Amino acid sequence: MADGTLMDVVTGRFRETRLYLRYAIAPFRPGARLPTFEKPAELKWPIKSDLDTPQLELIISEARRQVDRQRASLESLRSRSNALLALCLAEIGLLSAGANKVFKHGWLIAPWAVSALAVLLALGGAISLLSARADFGGVNLIGLATADPPLHRVAAKSYATSTGIGDATIAARITVFRDAVLLAIIGAILYAAVWPAVTFQNSDLQQPKPNVSEVAKCSICTPSLPPQSSSPTTQSTTVQTPAPGSPSR
Image 1 (cartoon, helix red, strand yellow):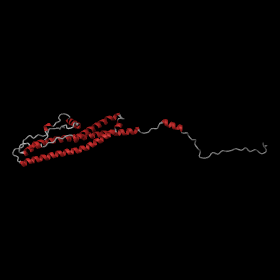
Image 2: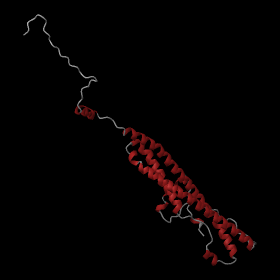
Image 3: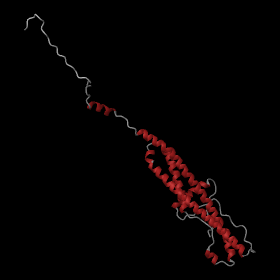
Image 4: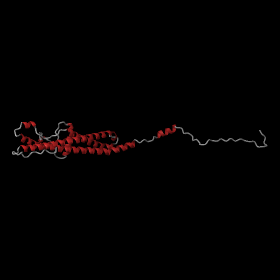
């Protein structure tokens, strides 16, 4: 059984931000115990001594169903975190592909950097939800085997005490998943605003412009041909004929 008293609880101002940052860096701290927003609910009243075995078995069965629901919720969060991880990797690929175009325009670097930071934080949260340890309550088999009878009462008390640990863990992880999705959306929106500006400016810069020197050079090197008339030129010949009565030479 996990001890709820050892769980770290984040309180105070900006506690959601501080909790998320601890989750985001959790992949670099293997085995670290992750915090929650509140301590597990404690069993403030003892189990009545007049409960018989069927009644204790009812408590145990209901506690097992609650633990099973908690673990099912954890698996659902992990499957959704897997999809979020794939989305973050795709966004990082797009950010990397457009980096060389963004850095040619100074005013686009700031939104691109904020987008990259948001996606990296979302990636850290998704990885932590997939790989970090999750605390759940349960019955310690060794402790149950060495306990004094009746064992049904010991198991019922252990389950009733430990089910609150899983509830606190799932509540914290749902909040982390929500924040990771929000960061991924912010990163995508910022990059969507940057990309058209880069694309349009590059298309304007890449339009070919005529080179005046090359045009002048080509006009000098290429001789101009004289215009040809469509009808052939006719040459006339004038013959002088002597007048009558004049002496011939």
